[in-house]
Image (cartoon, rainbow, N blue to C red):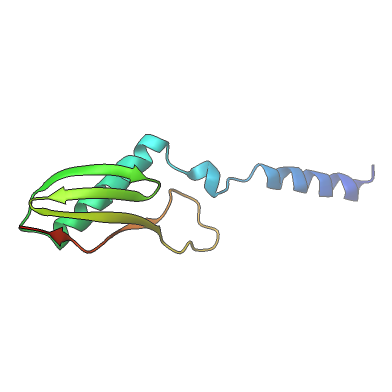
Length: 102
């Protein structure tokens, strides 16, 4: 092999070892903890007069929350990713309309 081909092969090999977003994701238990913190914060801000009684994981990116006589669904929504950013998933908790039956 020529020197130029060796350098090109080495460069391609090195690129394959660069960390990407998938390698920087949080472990599942820490990701879930981050989501739960975001859900509780969002509901506490929306319904400050009602203490949160329960948070239930419904499915991927969806939680059901009961706070006093109110219940609501909270969705985990990805924030737009910047270019070249490596790190944990960037998201926000987006609460739905509370159903506060009395």
